[in-house]
Every structure is written in C-alpha cells, then in structure tokens.
Image 1: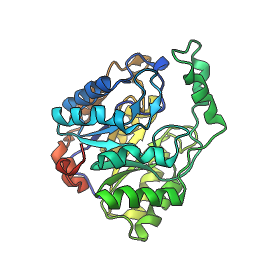
Image 2: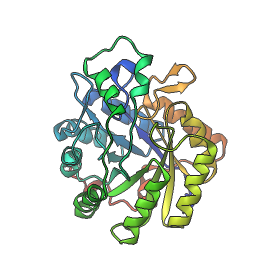
Image 3: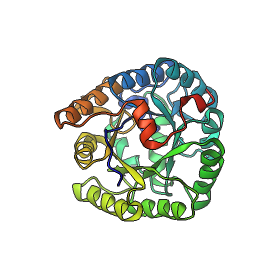
Image 4: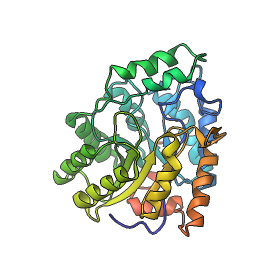
Length: 311
C-alpha cells in the first residue's frame, strides 16, 4: 500500500440505499444535494460521491439532467473532487448507470468490482409508515435480486468511461474476490496505478465488519497491489466511525456520509453530511493525522483536474 501523506475524506451524500422514510435529513432534491455537498466540503471532505434522486419521490434516478442540476453548482462553490456513481440504483441497467458519467466526464467515478447479493430487505421490519409507495418494495426486492457487475460490464466501464475520458475510479470492493477481480484488470494493463481501492464492510451480502475482516482485506490488497494502490475504508451503519478510525491509523483514507450511515452516534440521526465529516475529522486530528485538501487528493490519486470535466 502506498502510504498516504494525508488522509483523504470522501463523503457520500445521498446514495441509493437509504430511503426518505428513514431520515428527514437525507438529501433528495438537487438543491439539497448541493447544500449537503458544499457543507461536507467545507467540513473537510475533498471528494464528494454523488447519486441523483427524483426530487418528487426521493427514488434513485440515473437521469443525467438531474446530475447537471447539481454538479455545476457544487463546482461553483467548492474545489472538491466530484465522484459520480456508476452503481446507480437497484434494477438500473448498465446503460442507465453510465448516463451521468458520459454526460459529465468526471475526474472520478465509483466502480463496483463484482456482482453480488446487495441485501437491504432486512431493514424493512424497522419501519411501518412509509413516506412513498416505492420504498418498501424497493427494499424487499433485494431479497430476490442481485446487483450485476460482470467482467464484461466492468471492462465496459473501464473502456467507455475511464479510457475515453481520462476518468479514474474509486474501486468499490465488497469482498475479497473483488480485490482479485481488480488485480485481473490491472494485470491486463487496462488500468494505470495508483488504484483508489475502497474496501467496504458490513453490508449484507458482502464481507463482515469485524476488525479481522478489515485486516484480511488490507493484507490481500497489499499482496496483490503492493505500492500501486491507495486504500480507503467504508463501513455501513454503526460500524462507520470505528472501522474508519482503525483504517486511518493503519495508513488508509476514509469515507463517511449519509449513503453509508444515517447516524452520528448511537440512536442519534446525523442532521447533515457535514456533521459526519466534522466528526471523523476531529478524530483524525486527535490522532495527529492531517486531512488532504482537494488539490492534495488530486495529486495523490493522479486525477486529471476539475478543468477537464464536462460541467
């Protein structure tokens, strides 16, 4: 692992997992996403990970027009790197998932490194009154479906987005096999280091959130990639701050945000993405770890620069 001189904080401000019923603070409209992103950047996030939602229902949407309602506005107000999801939302086709990347030609995109059971159905019993009709079915359907990221699909994203636009990737690895899949594409020289490897813990269908799970992912990545990667840690729900802290102590970068956890502490909903960013930044400061600026993050990840995007 290439040791990071400073810690990159990524903030995933809305995602496609949580639904409006779960928190009144989840950003939905373009203006809410702008405010959430700018607040997160001001709190210390140098990368903002972005999904879009239908502003009328809060349902995840691939519509590039919605992305273009917030991307330029965020860019006007902050120097943060904007990272556009190619995971999209459940049941979206690959073509739909790539629409925003094609329109924006961003510095950075997420790329899931394997098909998997992306299970959210177990959340349903926690709620009885749903704000929108789509929410309950959307979550229940994860019990019988998969999120598809075949080798062909992954290669298409690498070629059609990465090679076409000079876009780099946040490689989202939910299990050990995903690291080996990433190594396959690196061995084929379809990718250029440094790799930004986001190891993800605690999602049902992926690897667990035990400290040993994180250590195993780190050891495996070290063996496969050596000094060719920058490591980052994402942990779902209650595991967010603990595993991010542990990973940062070990030389990793961190990701927080309402996509990954709706809470600031036990039983306490986060009122903003900025609150989570500020919390992890305080923790990093107490550990004598410095936080990377957007310019430093661009240099560490060898990004093309904000002047080379299409928004």
